[in-house]
Length: 270
Image 1 (tube, rainbow, N blue to C red):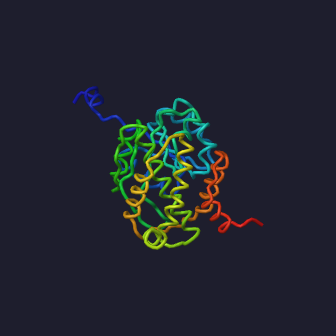
Image 2: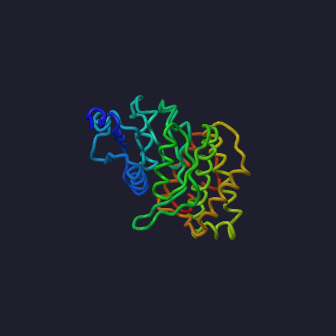
Image 3: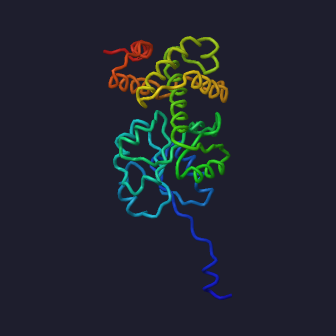
């Protein structure tokens, strides 16, 4: 066979993806991209992100899988040429978070699965994803047995992000007061859960500067509950989530009495 013909028909190598943050969720995403043929370049805290980006200019995606608290300082460091390849996976995320960093076209996913150390992945429901990398991310998740659904536009994605914030903030903050799982929370402490969710939604409205459909968000939260009725309310970062919410509320001039009371009980000052 002519070598030129052979080379012309040989499949092109699939470009790598860069992964910043190799925790539990990052490892799940890495496995998915590896199974779809993408080499994965991890970036640890000991490495320079700018060096890795310079060394891999043709990477097809840049995944930020860092903790929520680390994202605000990281986003402004992403060069403009990488914005369309950026994939964000954090909770407590809203469009202004990336827009204020000058990023207008990332890919964003609202993660509805959890991965605890030493335990298999547990999926609550399909994870919505939006952006230029949505199909690639959808395929990677499917490769590891997880479901995703592509949403059509930023407006729809904003709703999905708000919904996840309502779910995780309501359950975590309620867990600081009553502990237990989401099934017990709703069956025995529904008024508390509704009061917390209402204040969380008020905060979300202020952050996006738009009214929200509260009934639809409560309904969506209950669908999340149904995905894993034994899901523990109080996560290990519950106190930090509550503190971040109150800090944002203070910046927005909001008074959230239910959240403030829980913080006073759960995190008493010296």
